[in-house]
Image 1 (cartoon, protein in one colour):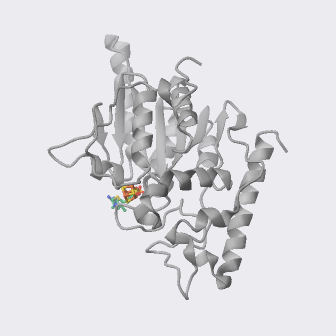
Image 2 (tube, rainbow, N blue to C red):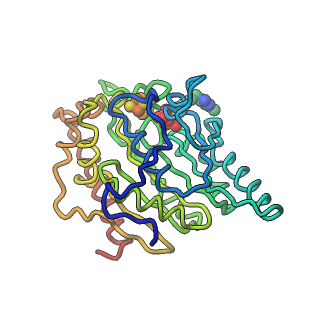
Image 3 (cartoon, protein in one colour):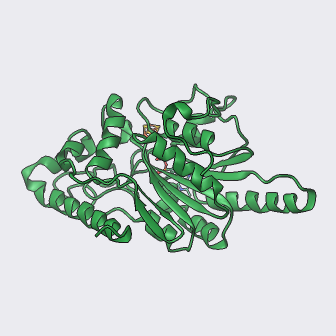
Length: 309
Ligand SMILES: Cc1ncc(C[n+]2csc(CCOP(=O)(O)OP(=O)(O)O)c2C)c(N)n1
Ligand code: SF4
């Protein structure tokens, strides 16, 4: 496919995401935004739901956005994007003005939970947009509350690990699964430790007419109580332990992009993050075992879908 690359050095040089934003050191969100703004061809319009990305990049009178950018409420980024797309479609038809690609960035709280109805509506109506969920596995901007994306066992301020509960008791929602169930043509997972894979998937999403959903793993040193210098190492371990399988769905076919034959022990991943430290205590072994089962079940499910089992 045109626009695909084999190495980082082939990425376009132009930076449409300006330096000087206030995202935390070690945060994974900037890698996503820089890469996406390079991978999606012009013209493009960005819609951002409330969350860390929005508050840290638009501190008046400054902005980090060198593209047309719209802030939307926490719950309706996909509805805002739908309206923009529909308006430009009419403009194109009536006046021949080339339509921009509409790209949405929203956190897991704004996607898995509060913005879900707007996302579902946009997918069902078939708007031509790329919806990218940056998933730091909690509501970080408002103080680390659990979301539908928080994994089982993680400690957050609303699922604090202690004598009453050992962190969150429920497992993570399958966002890609529910997106695909809407009948969309393309969906994929992304990870900052695999930037070329990420770039090429965004290029592919941009080439498709209709809604596409991308799910990005973003380390959050503040919420995860991890060392900012080790964010990419943690992200890579997420793939190598099968916590975060890299896969894509395209027109009915599933492909696993990084086939992890011999996964690393989950403990290597958990011990780098304070949110999981209690899972390594003997009394919480049952939660750890359950989490391992979740991960294996998900991996085996994907192998089957990809025709590899
Ligand atoms: C309807 C509504 N409820 C609550 C809020 C307060 N609020 C703003 S951002 C946010 C959390 C966002 O979490 P997420 O989407 O995961 O993004 P992150 O902060 O992690 O970047 C909340 C609860 C709001 N703005 N609107
Ligand atoms: S709180 Fe987490 S997601 Fe938010 S800017 Fe900081 S590191 Fe990034």
